[in-house]
Length: 229
Image (cartoon, rainbow, N blue to C red):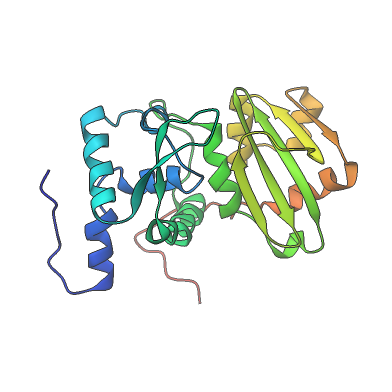
């Protein structure tokens, strides 16, 4: 597949030459949460055909953003992981997510898919480091078949797919309820009161949870809107 280029000696244009094609940044998003097998990427990115996925991964390998690895036991299967250059796209992807939470997220559309596992990166995007000062806690989330956890360590966050060892708090919630929670249309307290979610563990850590992740107030894009002064 021929690689298109803007033919501009500009850092922004050069970067978009590398990651500006459709699906490419979403592949980076998937790999920012850890190595993935080809089938894992297909599962998360419905609508991306096998041939195009293979072409995109070859492009990312060729450009030094992705490399092949072997997953540790018991899997021992081939997978893709980000190189250092690929990992350093993380802040840009998180910035796009934060912008999207404010300016692009309205009601879900009928044809759109939602994977609870995307929250592994989404939690980082809306993490309030100041609110986590002095907190050391491990939160595990179980959303249908998805399990992931967040480790908070005095203003820093690490989010990982899979169960946690000895979590301080464990939260179980259904997929649609979690989607509404992630979109800011409901709260965890409301879901617990409605019986659609449950939470167990350290009550003090649980009480602080709602302070740790803040969604920006949604804004409506307008052609006549002036920048904030």
